[in-house]
Image (cartoon, rainbow, N blue to C red):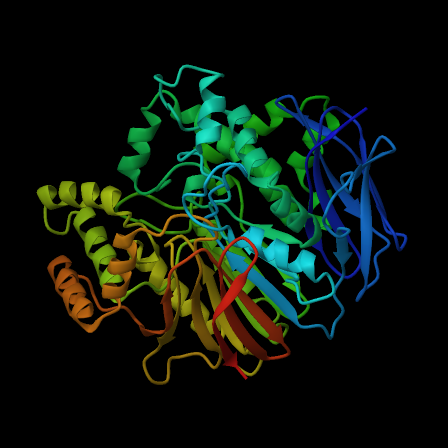
Length: 542
């Protein structure tokens, strides 16, 4: 009899359809049965000895909630026997419902229950506990997870013990993961956490990778990439990272209609073992990033979410560095400007913040100028070393891309059909804040624009981070930043911005509640295993 190894994860949901992701212990038919008549089934596909299914569910009605069960070859495997949690639900939105998006990034896997948690309570665990205690209360309509869902380069003690039993850790990459099988261990550790497993089974999710899903500062620069490609273990690590991301995260981001026309999804399902097809795809993605699109669009009524790949889609040549390759830039522009007047809120999900403290922004622009050779070869070598040591690789480190995003936001947010808000949702920097940009008079959008940054969900917040980011927003730091920019010959950015909330430090989540053209923001921090405390709440647009 097949067993449920991982999942179920409720991924895509609209008014009439959904997808549910599972991993089984052997080849089988995976089935979802809803209490209200919803049904779906799919045969598993095989990757590297693992058996997965993404089950399309139909028979749903807008504005309803159906408990569901999962069966493998006719045997019920979910809910788990003796589960303390309420039934997992598929909730379908109706046109008049508000949209609640809860978002954050950087979730290091919680340690086993018998070990002390070195980074404090997990915000996702705590959110799950609150929803389970009050199943009829408020819950997110979608979880938006903005990167670092797993840490391939920073494994837990439990995973290190597992790795040591598998191979000699004195050989590179040591305590980091090396191949696809080791990546699966990270997902087991993260998604078999009982609270998180239940939460992901009952709240839909959107995901995108950031650097630690592969390696710290992934694709920082052309020189960095050349060094990594000369490292013997790198190719297997990268291909395994992309393959495991496609299986565990990317597939569930897609709608049933998109899945039906996806050639790789068809290929892996049509063969007894899809490993070679997926590995070839990952190899093409490595050789030609423009051949693959990881970015995607999700619509929640009149709320449009654009999740943007800011890692694999980079152009790294120092003479033409760009956060997004030309195809990705076109895609983002087309989606942001599609059907004017069709959305009340435009959300751009990018793991890396667009607006940073002014000192950090100017330091990254200065560093980019040094690395381009603006101050000579010695400064260029210094700049490359500093870029890697100080993680100087956000939007500000790609100045043309920063400016292009500012221009796109202004265009998308202007005109008679403009949305009420354009919000950039980000994580990465292990704290939370709200920033608002301002354009020169007569050039700004009609929409209110916000940078909403929230991380970590569960990770360390070092004292240096707290002190550095508090100082980075100060007037003294801003003047210091302009001196850096002057040394690099960097022009002033086309916009100004100010921090209007934060900085907040802790394991935390932000929730956007969008009702009509109004927008409300709430920040909550995990306080112990059973409580999320509201730290800040504000009306972005009344």
